[in-house]
Image 1 (cartoon, rainbow, N blue to C red):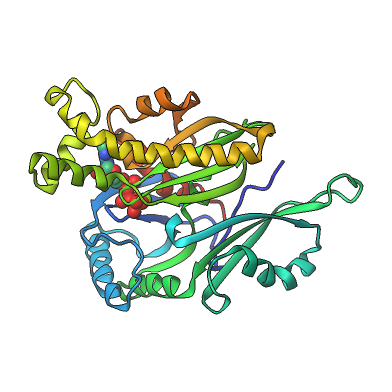
Image 2 (cartoon, helix red, strand yellow):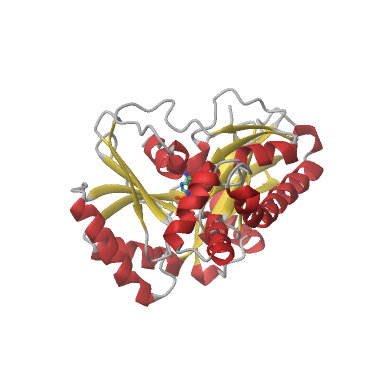
Length: 352
Ligand SMILES: Nc1ncnc2c1ncn2[C@@H]1O[C@H](COP(=O)(O)OP(=O)(O)OP(=O)(O)O)[C@@H](O)[C@H]1O
Ligand SMILES: [Mg+2]
């Protein structure tokens, strides 16, 4: 049974079963799930992020984010401690490396040198976490390599993000990467001789996460996201942002509406996204022909657009299904737009 990744970035303490506030701070929407002591959902929330960024990359962005968080937590009377946060994939370098098998202590002493070769963040700015995904048994002489998951982020990104929460008098205890959170929704019965792709379609980009069996092998982010679709509708039909969002959500690429003109304006952007997805699949399948991708799971608000799953199905010839985010969760489960809770739901399912 491969290890499911459970990486802390950085290692923050975790306090066992108690109320948890999972926060997925997206560039467009902030999604929050509160769970009680028994893990049951007591509240879910989707609210706008008017700032357009999710991680302050400049010091001047810390205070506006702190103010926004203070307002949201205050207005909704949310608990202020034990927050679980996710680092957006575009701010993370996720790599799975195969290296000759080492003991834990050998790995600990060589990991920062290993990271320099694989993570494109200079050592002095790097916050690194790692986890052994697979270590061959001693008796198994045929395989000599172990697999290690590396997740690196920039120290400044981490400092700025935690500073914003601190300024808002909030106490995060867990930070992990979005891909690791999303992975928890995969069905338990995935077999080792095939791979799956999770597509997290957000406002500012699309993340592609590949798992072989249930072990993470690749996570990448691509810069074309759902906001580009909104902008295309604004430009084509001279709409406000709000109206364009409404059109996108109501009609998407369903050609029965607006004489097909809405779909026409959206399709070029989806072609871009489709190109990114296709390239990812081809790249992976060429390197791993014996465990090619045979399933796609959808997540993220962008994937809710009418016609999107059908477009993927028509172009990729791979089985496509939504991630079942709430299958094993209890309590106040949202009835609509469940896919938008992929990351927050994954944070909620984290154990320990
Ligand atoms: N029902 C819907 N139909 C179509 N699009 C939708 C729907 N609901 C949300 N969206 C779009 O999905 C995006 C928000 O999704 P999500 O919350 O996953 O993104 P985000 O986390 O804010 O973005 P990112 O992760 O890129 O920072 C917005 O662009 C929004 O317009
Ligand atoms: Mg997101």
